[in-house]
Length: 126
Ligand SMILES: [Zn+2]
Image 1 (cartoon, rainbow, N blue to C red):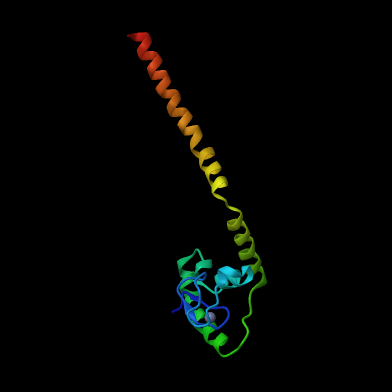
Image 2: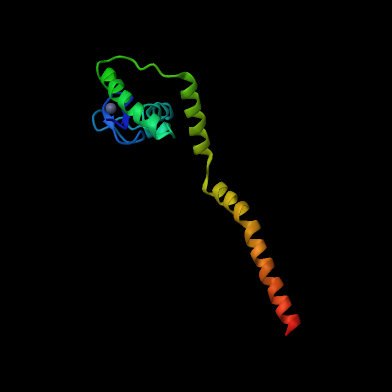
């Protein structure tokens, strides 16, 4: 069972963003090809059972592409994947650091406050 299928030639691949061994299409060089590559992969399913089912469909879809047939894409799903691609593309290292700091800063301030309280109390009671 294929985990991904080339959008250009229907050749099975392991990862949707991988370069095709058969036709050399590199989906990372074209936004729309990458979105359609993710569409034609089990990677778009969070549910393992749905991914397993779609892996069986992918073999048929790959065979259809190799016969020259066109793939019927669900437009809502394509739009969801485009939105996801834009969100991933907008995630920079700086933004990620900002999110991590906002997440861990309250806990760090709390621990420092406890340490300061312990230090002051031990100084007063000594
Ligand atoms: Zn290909």
